[in-house]
Image (cartoon, rainbow, N blue to C red; front, side, top):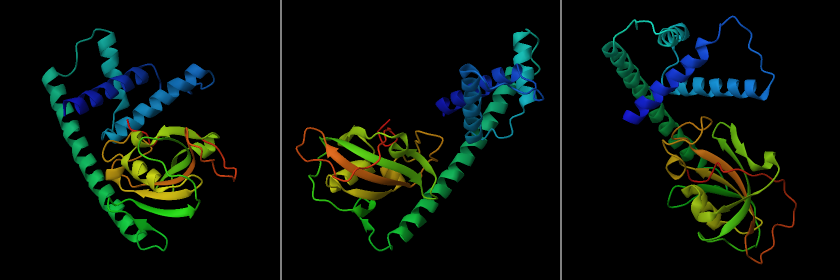
Length: 252
């Protein structure tokens, strides 16, 4: 609770610093790397505030607060009034997040129930679903191995949030150091195979999403190709595949 309040207050303060120096009618230049990075910081903060339930943030009030503080003017609200306002926003944010999480869980459950009925889709005891896109006869990794893979991760609506293929080089990772859905899925595969994994949220990130691109409690869909096992004599798939690298599936 305290951590979430700190995040909310910090985000508001940071946005205030940005807004204080800006006129909403002024066209901002986005030419230099610093300007582009500054815009990106503001954009990310705005997304964070929206997730925290601050989609009705009054930018003029934020700017006024910053101006009063910098100008050493008497604050227009008492500390008690401010704490009451933050407490209200915090409660509203938690209620919204709880509602969104509940909807995501229900939506994911329905998706997996329907997906399990499709031909070729298998469901393991843990709830992980997978289908074999390309079969091979290579070696199988263990939880102690380091493997080379290609992958593309998406939400159930098809929105891609990460792709080693698009980046152009494969990724090496420890089988035992990734999300549970990958740990299990990788050990089902043989070198050279390509699977499609449908990972329930409890085998992925649950409520602790590592990225704004992945809503909390999301079912994740991964196209995963096992290219090789480090230190193993098993040769990678003969068929050349695109490359890519990322750590979306690694544990935080």
